[in-house]
Image (cartoon, rainbow, N blue to C red; front, top):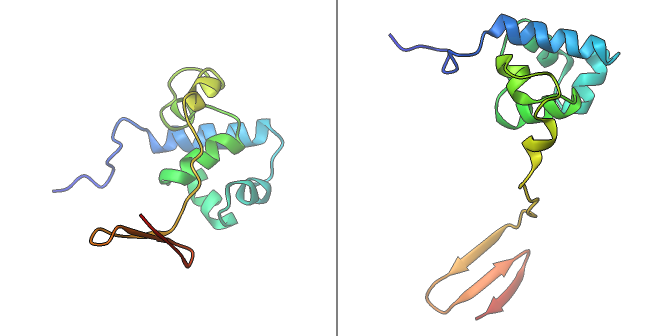
Amino acid sequence: MEDKNRFSFISTQGFAERLRRRRLGLGLRKQDLAAQVGVSLTTIQQYENGQLPKGEFAVRLGAALRCSLDWLLAGQGNVEGALQDQWAGLVMVPMVEARLSAGTGSFETSGDVVHL
């Protein structure tokens, strides 16, 4: 039987309680948090009922709540302990949609073709 909770080291109820306490501690309404994270009010309600956020939304949630993901998801460390270190070494890279052709060495982005 497959375990549906891939993150077995995370207590979903512990996560939900930390999320709720942090949101209230910052004076945020669920609607405010939803807008900051870029999800619906229903999604925030699901998080506060124990559903874990996925990927980018976990990162956004931590940023909106100004807390470390270790603390928010797993209850490890303190609420703001690793917040600064968590982003250290990350570099924002602009996303480019491109097509490459190996035969003649052409490179196309946004309609412009560059021959190499």
